Image 1 (cartoon, rainbow, N blue to C red):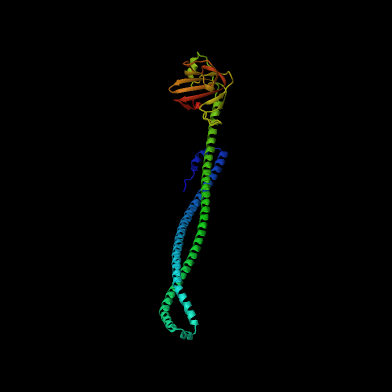
Image 2: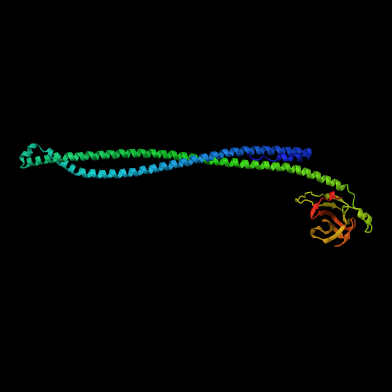
Length: 372
């Protein structure tokens, strides 16, 4: 059984989300559970189809072995038939040789028998010849007849064997044709089963991916709702903050009492941690200020850099000590230089438009709203 989707982990976040988000997440959860169930059902069917494919393949292999055995039997029968044919040819040649003198003797006897017995008395020596021929016939004909009978019996045996071999060849050919048909049917069944298996496996993977995507969608809905809510709270706090006062350089009492402040007056358009359209997360806050508005130091410190930097315009980096630094970008004009010591609220220059403030602790971004 596959591991279920971790949807229960969304419940704490879902409780904090709004009603619209709750309905959307609930729909995504239901769709994810349904997709997971379909994926599991397809996976079980795919396992059954895979077992069927293995069984069909085993039957096909067994059938191939049967066909090979039948082919061997057919080849053996053909070899035996060739041997029998050779023996039959030899017997027929021997019979022809044995028949030749017998046929000549039979012809002579036939001609002799056609003569009347009285003619034998009229010819001198004919009686002796007749007795001599009769004696030869009495001793030779039985042997010839016996050999002829043996040859004919051999011929009948050969013919019988040949008929039996031909019948066996016909049976083997029929069995081979039947086995070939079975092989074709099994091959087609195996192809169909493999296609069905591939379709089931693909469907299971597709439904599993859909279930995971729906689960991720539910988490993203909750996370976006939480980010929007947090960003709204931060924006509300920042909008309620008063603009930073511009202090004269000699007012050390008020400067020392300041903690951390915004560097310019204006509307906060981007809060800490907000994600831009390009996927970049804000590491500070951006304030839409009037061009030429005074930009002041958010806290006391030493200016480590003051000047133009790439596309950020004129920037100022202030070291507050103990690993704390502030980065102010978007200045149109600078009124401080590197290594200058400034107090909170002292002028750094004038705004060129949007001014961004980033606060870092040992190089890591810190939410400015928590320090105001």
